Image (cartoon, rainbow, N blue to C red):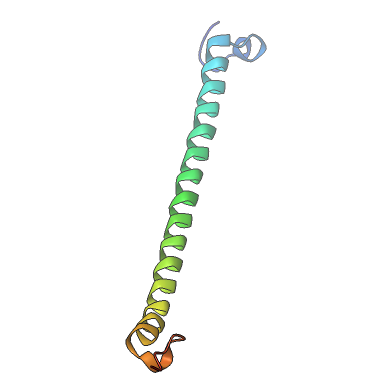
Amino acid sequence: MSGVGSKGELVNPDLDYALAVGLTGLLACAGANVLCQLCFNSLASQFWVLLYSTLTFASTPIFILISHYPSASIHTNDF
């Protein structure tokens, strides 16, 4: 009796199927790992871009004040 679901399949499993199931699980774990790395790198990149743009936006008015108004700068010409 070699029908599907017979007791002989449980006692003597086919090694090809076991290898295929194991490799499929390994491939699924590797794929999930790559997906997690891509998501983490994407979020980290977005965080640093937003942080840099915020700092640049905040420092621009200070730079304009220092460079545009001579009374606000450290170096004054009192000749």
